[in-house]
Length: 168
Image (cartoon, rainbow, N blue to C red):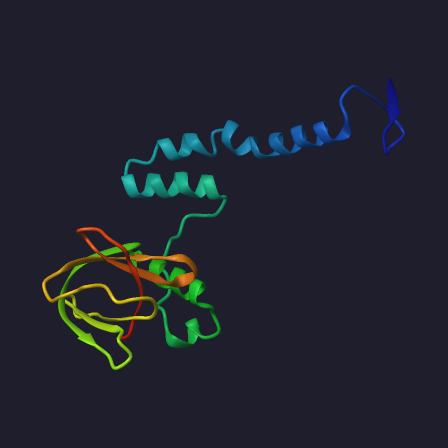
């Protein structure tokens, strides 16, 4: 069956959507097929430069030629926490851990019965819900990220956990 196309010519065979997809895929191939892409990356002797070339091909962005700009308080103003974290991680190369294994330095019980913990890495955390755990100085604990930005603390020997937040 033939249908007239937009320019009035008869067209056979495949639906327009399939032909459009083939055209889009083929439009991205000339750089790779002609040797501009992978072939030119293979000829780079320096490992970092070659990797940057491959990364640029994969992301369709030119490789960075100069170091990233320094971060200032003004450059972070107005960004939400996720954007700020991403910028800082990209700039410093430090990623946020998902789990922290640490020893307790001291445990205090507040007037409301909840715990306040000082850890060997100089961090301070407080319990924010539930019953306190039976914790003492010298106990090994694990703090892990929970849902909705919360953190859960439990003894490394096992048992239940309690929700905590960092206070320093």
